Image (tube, rainbow, N blue to C red; front, top):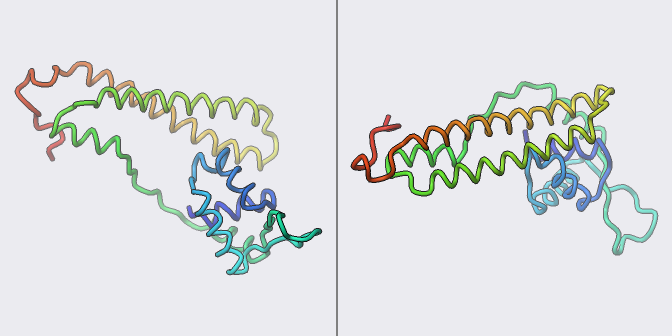
Length: 191
């Protein structure tokens, strides 16, 4: 996925100003495709220059008015081609997993605290996703709402996975001897 396609999707859902787009990213799209406000504004300029979006004509003088954008037919065609094309899954890159691997060779100082911190973060995110699902998708009848709900359910599934995995990791590390009791790091994960 790319930021231009996320922006085209958001603008097809509702023409918006850059500020409105950044707010929508903060409360919905950003859950699965994050972008800074600067990245969004920079990409809007590129999309407009490429003829994929345009600023809506202003009904009043532009001074102090937010520029609102809409998707042009070329932008819809680009998004359609991208959405219908193949996309391979991306390999997972997670610093916590790398930290566990590193802890196997340099020691576990602070590891349990970090696992508990991540567990709390994922529990909060799951609660937020569940609240959104109950609030916004209790009666998801239209095909569009059902597709949006599937995106949310992917987030719920990922958070559920991380909570289960972190609970397992904490149970596993609780069974380890305290640092120094075994005479140093073992060979775990040395391959």
